Image 1: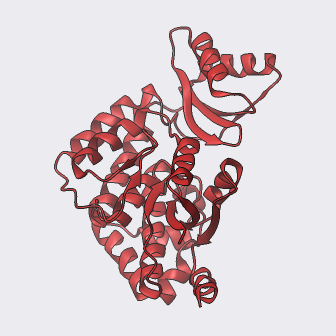
Image 2: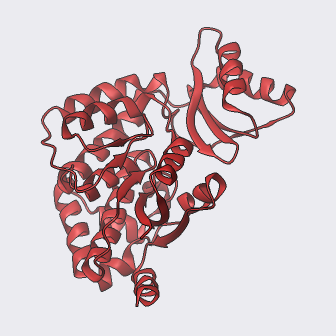
Length: 310
């Protein structure tokens, strides 16, 4: 029997209205939203269901909103199916969802941690100092060289290796601008991204330090299945390594392409994208078409899954 992986989305998959049907139709999903509201001390559920969009897209809100919606979808899935994956993985913020799903991280702890992570990432770099851009069609080695050339004493480096010839870079505004010019000289495209901070680069060190302090008092649990980590693109099921890997992830690149390749190498042929949207399904399709990905973000999606299994 082929192995199944559960995938969890990161920032950028949020949308006003996400999770509302789950909340209304699944007691298990409702319990997750209620637990998140209580843990955070404000209604993240209302923000997910009603917005406004400009508040939902603030990093400090987006991160707990996406995590909560993903775990609510997981709760609804577990309520109505007995699917047990061989491994878990998540893109950036999604790694926290994957750790909750695997049993390594308590949900209430996780939602508070990602709220702090979002605030810390937002505050690590003053507005207008950092930037990100998606570079299309350039191999990693060439791009690394151009980043070194463009840095000139500032920071610019690969932040997300998304696969399919897309590598996102992050750093100081001027350094990213210099890189974009170099990429153009190489007849490739660099598309500026609308982001509030330069994620997954050395400028995020203050955020990594704050997350590390918060993680020091968090108890990790036993894994029910391994989680492929963003930093190493290798499966981990050692609770003692979780905090260190999450802290490193803040300043290091997300090795998503290598993570998907690792999952395929481990025998994964199908995956469920648990949470809102289909961002990861698109990325996986570009990396390895041997893995089929289905979205699980609503009760209807779970019904379709059950019909397929029967």
